[in-house]
Amino acid sequence: MKLDDLTTEGSSLDCDRCGKCCIDTSMQLSLDDILRLEKLGYARKDFVRVKDGFYTLKNLDGVCFFFDAKPRNCRVYADRPDGCKYYPIIYSLDERRPVTDNEECHRASTVTELELKASAPKLARLVKRILQYSPKKE
Ligand code: SF4
Image (cartoon, rainbow, N blue to C red):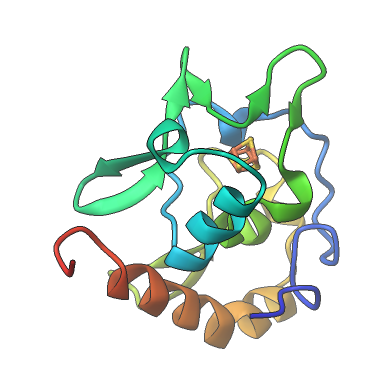
């Protein structure tokens, strides 16, 4: 799926790269995410864990396996999981719509209503793919 038209770089999100969203992450992964990261040479067992019935990013010393603490960078930024690209827009399964993670991201309020609305079909498809490839379904 092409996400170029809606990623944090393409949105009005004023990200200051605090890295907070990479601390103790439980970002869920689709099979596409896992295969893309494996193609870069990373072993699945190193960056994937099962949490709450989903495949999610694994943490190392309290931060995402891919997060470099010193320069505060994502080592796989161009190929990061789709959920990371959308963040701080997340999909609320309860409300069945995209919402912003205002609790964790102090810049979430810079996402516009239009961007939130535009993300709905794409995020719904991503959630579907994540649900399709969950440990319970294998
Ligand atoms: S993959 Fe990159 S952007 Fe996503 S949580 Fe890990 S370090 Fe952060």
